[in-house]
Image 1 (tube, rainbow, N blue to C red):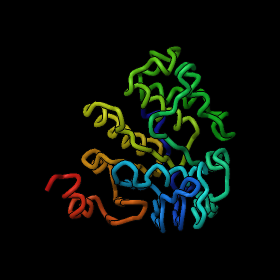
Image 2 (tube, one colour; image 1 turned 60 degrees about the horizontal axis):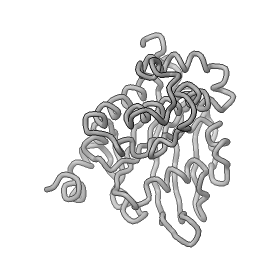
Image 3 (cartoon, rainbow, N blue to C red; image 1 turned 30 degrees about the vertical axis):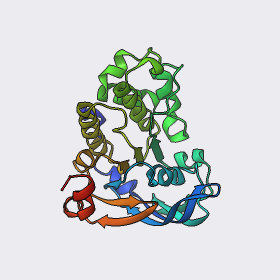
Image 4 (cartoon, one colour; image 1 turned 180 degrees about the vertical axis):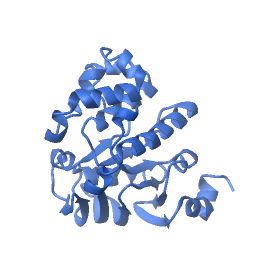
Amino acid sequence: MKSFKTPMWRGLILASSISINIGKAGYGPVQVLHDVAISVNDGETVVLLGSNGNGKSTLLKCVMGIITPEAGEIVLNVDGKSIDLVGKAPQEVVDLGVALVPEGRRLFASLSVEENLILGAFRNAARAKIDENLNFVFETFPVLKERRRQLAGSMSGGEQQMVAVARALMSEPKILLVDEPSVGLAPILVSRMIAKIKELKELRDLTILMAEQNFNQAIKIADRGYIIVHGQIEFEGKSAQDLKDNDMIKQYYLGA
């Protein structure tokens, strides 16, 4: 594993952060997000906490260009440049170094594990490193190497989640968006996946924004985070401890 570790100087050269200020966004006449402002600094793991239907996935889709906000800006700071992502197509966002692990995995079920992974190396910066990155994800997730020829749709939920994370890594991202990695997984698998995301962040020098409703797991790797309710940010925790001490967290997540 050490041979794949990101050099210490990479974070200095490829420092990346994102600032999200969305006035309105949604699906046609249905407005989901209302005056949402969050930021993710270089090298942080920031969690976006909230139950289903409160706008977590919509926010990540806005970042990726899948949904275009009606008002606001999403500024990516990378390699000394500030770029507004609003209006950019998803492939342009990926090409700038942002990757999404979508909720529900969204794999190509009729393609093999390896074919799904290679499709993740879409952008030019990643195509030249396909073999290197395949070796990395296979060492990180050994079961994927064993089953590289297996159809993705025939794998278990936990294995499919591994493929989804590995596919995102194949694009050589600087910022990784992870949407509900716990959905559909047994508790022990959730714990392992969260631990693996933390490990990958350190190995690849990633900046991570993770949307999650499982507070007890998310807090294990969070530097800080936000609570989103009905499309608005109701609380910003300056640290993981801030989140643990918040009354909403105690009431809805900790049963206090």
